[in-house]
Image 1 (cartoon, one colour):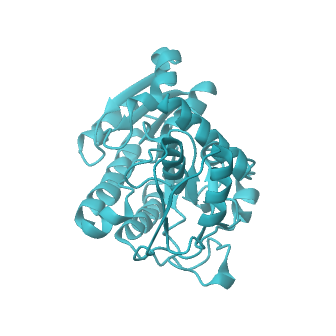
Image 2 (cartoon, rainbow, N blue to C red; image 1 turned 120 degrees about the horizontal axis):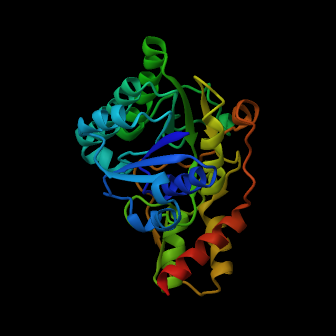
Length: 316
C-alpha cells in the first residue's frame, strides 16, 4: 500500500516509517527538516531502496497539494506540526499557519488524491485544558478546552477532519497523544523531559527540576504509539482515541528512576514552575483498547533505559 507520512523525519514519524517499511508499504515522507533529521531515517534509507521517497517540503507550501495529487497515497499519517507550545504563545499566527493552514493543505491533497484515510496526530496533553483531579485519567468526552494557541490549532484541525469526512467522504482517525518519549527524541528545544534528563545526566550537566517536581505526566513509549498509528489505519474511523498509559508519573519519580539507571551523581537545580504548566495529566485509554485493539506494553523503566542507551551511543 502507498502511504505518506508528514513529519516523517521526526522522532515519532521516522519510527513509524520504519514500521511501515517493515510491513511492506511504499512510503513517501514529507518533512521540512526544521526539527526532523535525515539521520533519523538512516536505517530506512539504507534498506528500503525504491520503497522510500523523501520530499523536502514545507506543508505550508501549496505545492504539497500538487505533490499529493501526483503521488496518490492511499493512507496519510499527518504528524508534521509546529509542536512548541511556547512558540505558539509567542507567535500564534505562525503556529496557525503551520498547524491549521498546513493541515488544510494536507486534507486538500488527500481529497484530490482520493486518499482512503488520514490518521492525525492530535495532542492529548493540550486538548483537554487542565482537568480537575477527579476527572483523571481524562476521557475523550471531556470538554475540549485548550489553553494554548497550539492546542487551539490542534482542536481546529479535528473540526476540519469532521467537516472533510462529511463533505468529501474522507475518512479519518485521530490519536490524542500523551507525553511520547523514546530514542531519537531531540533533547533541545521543545523536547520531552525524558530526552532532556537523559542528555544532561550522561553529559554530567546540571538537571533542572521545575516547581517541586510533583507535577505528573502520562509517559508513553514511541514504539507503542507507532503501533496505535498502524492500527488506526483500519480502525477507529471518525473517532478521537487517547493514546497514553492511563497512569500518572511525577517528574520526581521519573528523575529518580533515570538517575539510578544512569549510575551518576547529578547536580540538581530547582527552578520556579513555568507559567501555564499543567500540574497533573493522564489519559483514559479504554476507547483505544476497544476501538483499536490497542494497549501500551512498554514499562516506563524499560523505555527510559532504552533512551539512555540511545543517548550513550550518540555521545560516543
